[in-house]
Image (cartoon, rainbow, N blue to C red; front, top):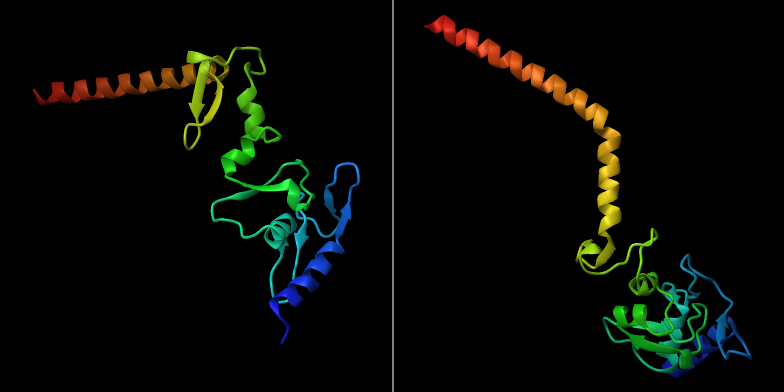
Length: 181
């Protein structure tokens, strides 16, 4: 029976066969399989499923990944599996790290909406599942007004029909009540 270190060594050799070291950045570029999000994928053995290559590298060279934490690429290169470029972080720390290009970080830094309105005070509309999404209140209200104006003729026609129907119902009730007396 093989020891864990012997198995790990063969895994390590298989892993390193799929790595190309970039001399300028010192990134260990993953040249094996890649998932649809651009991260390297590694299958250590035939009886285990695929593992993200950077996570496998971290666990192999540094240690276990604590529950609730993610691996943050300090170099900001998704295909890098260099353990020196990987660190543990919460999801929020990972998104808002200094080197991050996450959309949430980019959006948080915006001071004006695409139409040039300043995103401050009462001009911010907070929404979303946990009220952390923001957009321009003025643009939101302008959009509502545009939609109302667009539907105005149809709305007027509907109200006219509704009023006529109500008037007919009222007159019918009035006639029935007069017949009773």
